[in-house]
Amino acid sequence: MKQVVNSIKKANKILLTTHKDSDGDGLGAEMAMFYALKKLNKEVFIYHVDAPPKKYEALIDKDLINIFSKQKPLSTFDLALVFDTNDERLVEPLFSAMVPNISETI
Image: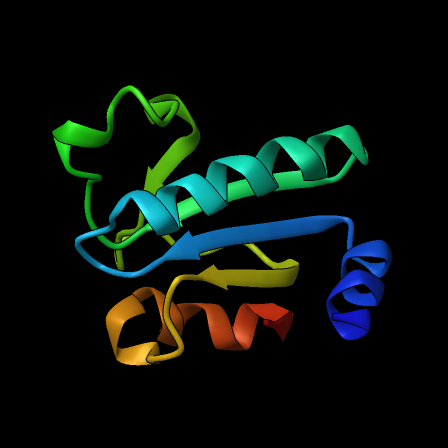
């Protein structure tokens, strides 16, 4: 936990994501972290590999979610936080694009 806190403190530009076919756990964690990081004056972006299911629209702000496309290069980030999965395959093809553009992934 200390590593996460220290990494967040050091980072200015942060990417948040969750697994394909996102669910309430991943989406809720993303939204909560988005607003917490904004209060810390961080530059925060949410990227998904697919659109969130409609049944979660009340839980999220769809305007904050960017759908990743291989045709649009990913910006450089200081930190990526991946929620609700430890399997990078569930975040592909975004994960492969993130790795060279992000200093640290948690």
